[in-house]
Length: 209
Image 1 (cartoon, one colour):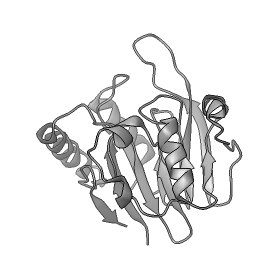
Image 2: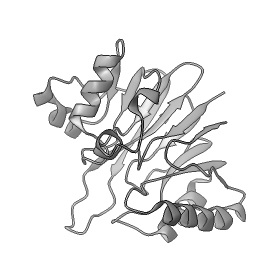
Image 3: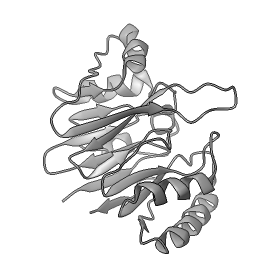
Image 4: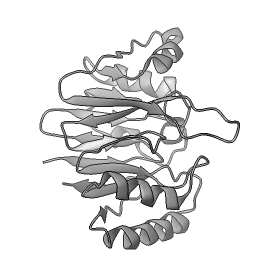
């Protein structure tokens, strides 16, 4: 059994039978006040897909490390370099229970494409970060839906290509609550025709799969 809790934007807490992983602890979840951080629960691993602040906030990572016990931080070398001045050790290895795929971030308006590491935990849940390049997914895929580097059409096409059984919507911080709900409903109906279920999770919501 796996429990998935959305925080805000791309930050997701995934608890499987063997691990408790917090993906992409960005500044939105840490600073916005939208989420009670003490409600997160146990975290054994922090997995960070790339270096942008909406996916990694050093103070949030430090908070997670200090409140836990032997918390491992996983990412790529760019994030390791970013967090090194904060005395946060980052492993670029792939530990048991995880698989990774190194891809590129979707091209942002200034033309850059930072390195992006897609993570899969326990063969159950895949977080692609800010990329549509991953070649495969676990049965549950975190699906970025409102992004400056692509469109909702791109989100649907990505899901259709990798064929998860279910998707969790992420990357929607700058939308109102009604806007998030409407967008989830739209994409949910479209993907249902492809046999893909969208888990209708807003911020703070939890699902068990």
